[in-house]
Length: 88
Image (tube, rainbow, N blue to C red; front, side):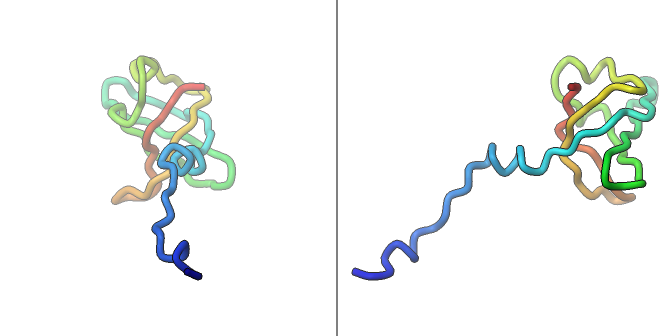
């Protein structure tokens, strides 16, 4: 039975797919009162918007200018947006 393997769907590991899209950057500013800030990252001159609810773990309460972070780069309604942000 030639070709039977070709008809099977390819399963992609979601964890591997997520890790492949992570970007590292530096927090430029974060306003705890307004719950948002901006991250700069290599490969782009545009700053990336980050909202407090996108920050994973306890570090979400303590982002400050100069902190190194990893995040998923997504497109928001007004431009680049960070998701799944983790402090490094």
